[in-house]
Length: 366
Image (cartoon, rainbow, N blue to C red):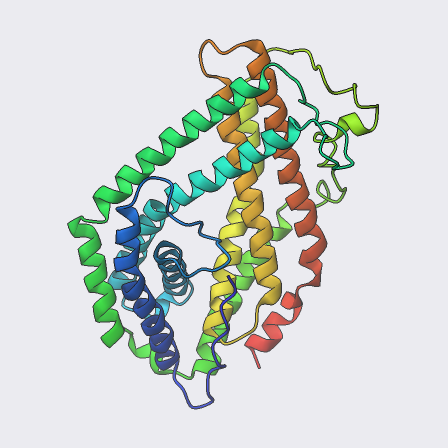
């Protein structure tokens, strides 16, 4: 969901006034969404909506959006608030974000992985005009699907139970009380009495500079070549309809160092995703449009979800006593998700240079 940007700070407004309006708005959204989110958590597992659902009207999704914007504003503009209050608020908001995001993440991961496996196993019949998937007719595909479905359902149920318990805890009530007080008055320091047009852009520029440094550290040269991500799904169309019907099992995927190498490879991209969100929320506080940031945010969200899905598949492939055929199918799905990771990196590398971030410092010092 793309939020409409705030009106640009008036020439006479103070930084504290602009920040107070922004935090009051987000805290109000928090308090309105909380009862609905608690009600949703009382429903059966798997019914919590996706964080990135198009409608964005469900209680849990709205609550997550307000939590992220509150936390981002307190991080970027934290120097304008009482330090102890800002740090405690960020800690509690991070806790709630991590809690609420688990079940929707498992649900999206389940849809992603089972959908990928179904596509890879497609026979190409039904007038689609496409050849069979790489795993069409493979004996390990049904068992691999059942294994993934079972493990992700169990993880989602556990996350649901955790949410159900914590949303009735005293910690959440204390955070709600904190948000209620925030609607009335923000604990600002004396520096916040300065002009909004001077203080806020300068702070936001620091967030953009941190983002720029993170992007410069990315290996964009390795992501400059497009990956043929559809090839795994439709290899059969290149060599005839029989080419991908029977794929022999190849054994269990390797573990250990490979997982650590992939995690280290993903880490700077995940860090960039966090910094991009902070820069995006900072631009909202300053009333600057950020459509390009919204698009890049979605690209890095896809990167994160594909990387997490690949980890889930690798974990499933190490389940004791699974057959080599099942392990092979899981290895193909893992490779498919890693291609999705590379595709997202390629898309990011194409779109990043088009951002108007090069003129950010000029705007901040205007």
